[in-house]
Image (cartoon, rainbow, N blue to C red; front, side, top):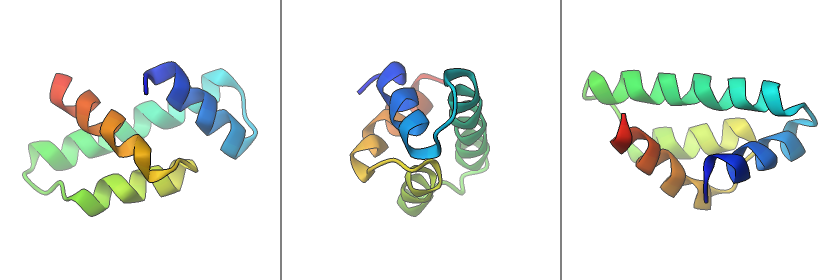
Length: 70
């Protein structure tokens, strides 16, 4: 899954536009990155991020990859 797919799924879940969905995703990635940097990131945080954005848990792989690149 790539960023475009994730944004499309967020758009479908929140019935919002592409820009807003991207903002939601970026905010969630920032929050997860802060947890990672503090040594406080847990798998449950990734599940919570997916739930909060209306995504299925198979999107966790995207978040793990995105956090590894930053």
